[in-house]
Length: 93
Image (tube, rainbow, N blue to C red; front, side, top):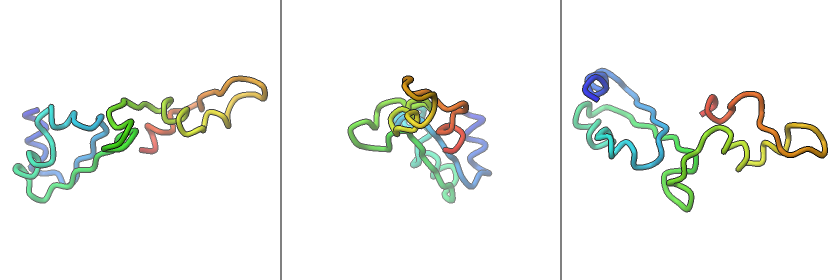
């Protein structure tokens, strides 16, 4: 984490995609980053949001495809839902 904290000194933006609470456990949540660099902007992207019923659930691209219904658009007629060829959720986030 020492290298990361050194980088924060010169960064404008940090983006993270952990399950809510992980950055705090790692000791790099917004209050810590702001102490290092008062101008820092922290963006948090999580599969199910920062709070709510599913917030603590881990999400991957395939989970997002299934939960959103996207998998029902792929595959063959009369076959089970099929994941898209690429991990759209991970790439687009």
